[in-house]
Length: 160
Image (tube, rainbow, N blue to C red):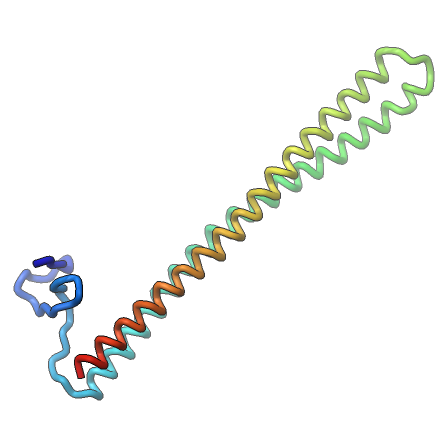
């Protein structure tokens, strides 16, 4: 026999059978359909509030990840701007005598451009993952809750 005990309750508290065993909890005091319906509604309200808290936490995490990705994209945009400035600075040097100076300026601009492209790629990938993860977590949580509610209503209908 499997049992689950809620912290703070005595081991001999009200227990009622479930498909997985016995669970300690608030068993209905009577079998009045109105009282049972009231208890189901109160449980559904508690579940909805708890689920809103879970969804809020999941969305907060996704927003933080999106903020990090946006910051990386902004840094990359700064590097693109610096790279363009450096590359444009190399043009006048290259128009004179072709020497090592303009090659250095061009190489520095190229390094900034490559760094910017890498940061854009990483930031974009993180943003997509954060959006996808947040969406799938919320969807799976809502599906689990719908299944739980269906099972609860089936038990309530069978028990009355």
